[in-house]
Image 1 (spheres, each protein chain N blue to C red):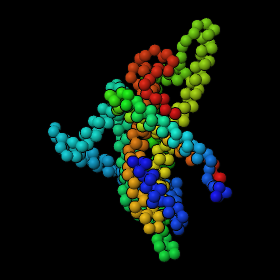
Image 2 (cartoon, each protein chain N blue to C red; image 1 turned 30 degrees about the vertical axis):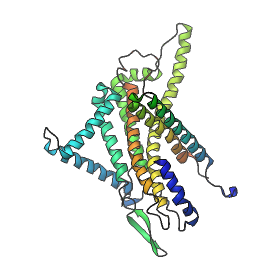
Image 3 (cartoon, rainbow over the protein chains, first blue to last red; image 1 turned 45 degrees about the horizontal axis):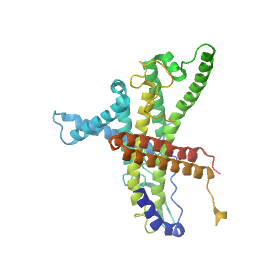
Length: 298
Length: 68
């Protein structure tokens, strides 16, 4: 699919590289402010965030309003979605841990997925105020912009997860257990023991750095992918006479990227949580880092 | 033609690295699924996670490199 898209780009895009006239559409990394109340401003990505959140709440209420035993229609779809997510995450987190954390991972996944796809609805990001320059209309500040195409949104989610991760880990392991888990490690006797303790202390430091880097990597990855996708579509629309055809394959590519990024963000947060307090993690003796099947993300 | 080359070497190298990384992940995932079709689900999940981790690197370069 991507190869086809690349071929398409070369065949259709190449002449554009030389024939492009007019300034290339450059999507600004910052969301444009719609209403400024001095101390608090509402930007166009906040508008999309609220709309998607409201949409999710309304759909869930409507789906579950009748709540009959044999689900049909919207309720059936919504139950299938939630149960599928629950089953999928249970495989990762284990039955004990998922009870306390499923609410977060499910809403995270659904919110990111629908925000990404909502940002691709025609009209979002292309409708808004602008100026008329040399004859035709230039859009300066669109009314709506993809929620995740704004670093504030993604870092808010990443930091929220980091706080929750700390809370869950300390609640499950206790502060001592939490530190022992990061710096813990036995092995060796007598003089060798001191040597091992020093080694595990430095391993713990590296672990702390990698833990601290997680919110940065989570937020940059989601923001980067979504923002780059919107930039690709935006700059392709500038094609003089084929602007509508060129971005078509990349539009569907963005649908896929939206799904994958939502899946990845949720999977990584679930994996990070299960690394700390996963299946039987706390009951097991604190050997060196228990060799988990799950990958240690950075 | 080369005199007009502009842009940042950092981002180019980061993109090169992450593309190679994602390519390797895809190759090995396909191989692993071929060798053990039963575990296709888990392999796909891990491949998606690792591909995303590899792809994340290029965005660190894009946003953290000082422009110019």
